[in-house]
Image: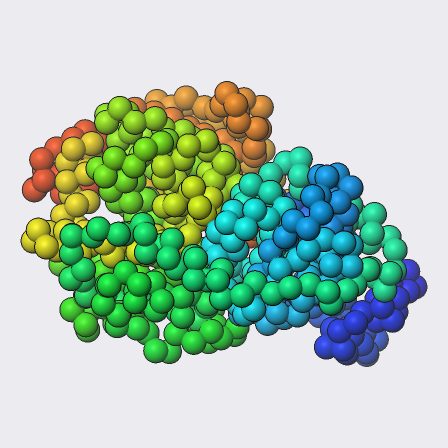
Length: 553
């Protein structure tokens, strides 16, 4: 370990208010000095730079050092955020800044640090009285007229991670250039001793009224349901959704679910799912098994902070997880059929089906960049979704993805279909028969070095294919040629009459993500529809082979 790094480490240990991370760093240094190369590498990486603040806020593994999530980094982030609010945004005196947290390791402590620093800067933080789902904070920011909001969460990341998510005055996630301005303020204060951060315990707590109002609002979304007869299974995946789910069910009149006991109580170690994301292969196996045993009509999972909703149903006699696009289309179709006013929206990486449906029904449709920071900002939004199992069913009150409100709408839809002798699978057949099957798939290329992602994107841009899966395609480089009204983004899109592909780097993980879609003409339900879907699956396999060959994946 060179002297410069050793000096940084010693300064960190002297300043860190957290005994756990101080001790961890001292242990790593001792191990590195004794010849442990793994420990030396970990120390070097932890001090390789500062954790970057972006539109997703902060998210990383917990541990000591400026490149990890810890109390020093959270204090600096809150210090910079507070200065941005007061000095750049014209913070109105007395306006609340809502601070919430999930049940991960250190989340409550990070939230208290946030509230104390904001209070020390003269803001008026409101700290939630207990851990809450992320959409409760988005809802509370809108309902309370907050100047900003912070949720301490790493959403569906592994248990070693934590994060810091910021909402601005309109209760939407921050977007450029807000992120760079906040990051600049963080950089300014990070140059000062962390002990100089102003702190005060003169802040209030958000009482039970916040959760009461949220539950009442979700219940209002399904008010007037014509049936409540639904058998269902549910898991919160060791997260914070379970207790709020119970209140929503009680308020709406739907029956309690068959729960996955092993995953119901919050547990920051996520012992049954290494990646607690309902999208991950196998992540919903326990709730699907519970649904099958209970003779359920639908199985639902929310991720650990309950902003995402996974669903599974019996399709063709086999229980399977529905794709994010399938659920998005079900919810979008339902909103259109109910005449919900406003625009419909999904991101460029989602299925084109929602746009097809909207055009056929005379409804306005908007394509956005990836992320709910963009979807939630669509003016007069009626419903928006992203294929990564995020759904905004109540944009006027919660302009962000919300797994619990999506859950409630899915229960109402399933119960009403059941009362008509139909199922979720039947509704999917009806949609595909009317508009033609739009079959989607996603492939990810994980890397050990981020430079590999840049190399693959460079190869794709240098020699973009003009044919994919036998179809001619047009190419759009979103970095140099974004759609009108949208910012440049690092993505390449290929569009043909029957195929659609988007390739982009992940915003939160070291992987390249490829979103594929195959489309067919409308065909009546029955053997013809099954054949069209099978043909789409073959096209998807061909698409991936072609894309992977160009990427060198």
